[in-house]
Image (cartoon, rainbow, N blue to C red; front, side, top):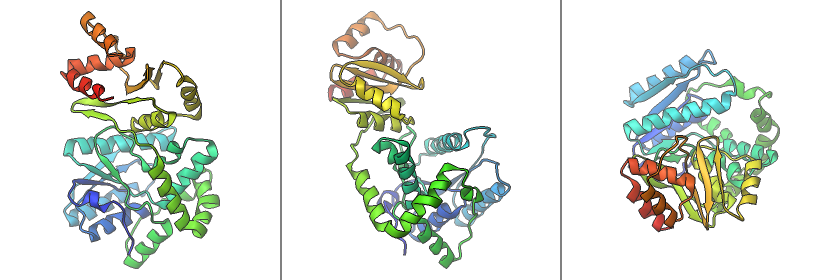
Length: 333
């Protein structure tokens, strides 16, 4: 029997399974069902393949017979940068459901091959350790946990399980097209290596995950998460940005590393600000609106050694009557 990871997180929680009717999510659906895990299903139809409607019908049918909710999104046509855009659409859909239906866990069917493919691609392109570990991390900022029970299981083991259990699944034949970089990595590098060194690769990826420095956001109801920490490293900044849905490029990481010796203030993608003031680093959503800060609060922020862009975030918190809650968090840093 295949051994699933992180089931303790799922037993008593409200769970949403990201489903595609493909190899991995089909296996995970039945594995979770076998183990008595309660979950509902979310699926996105991108409309780029003729069988996509059949995949949605497969999801609906399974959920009907098992008395689960099935959430379906029909995506608008994606005309360029499909993989990146589809990922954003997919996570936005999942997070919308999670927020509206109060789910606490998002279950994804990424398996060992996925994790290793991503690691190799990022390693060869020149990336930080955090980016190489991207397959393990959630991308959004809604408060939920991502759980990937198949991370130590290879695709070959999953296919064997489906064969033995006679479980139907759809094959996405675009996964065989070598014009896509990830498919080329899969066929030429990751699959052959996994065939010979599966256990060692799984162990190494797990150890790398455990050794990465953890950075947790401050979360206050109705206010977007923010980060403040002392004497931060590029790795900590990289992790915080990633949790905000932004992957730093190699150039950006080198630039930030060069800046860490002094004070600085930058905005990335017009979405988040990163500031170092004295010995603290502040990372928060960037407010593009010009905000007039009352004189009394300007003086208050100055005495608290709050950098200028983070002051705009505090003004947003003050408008929501959350300023004092934020300031309490800051006192502990």
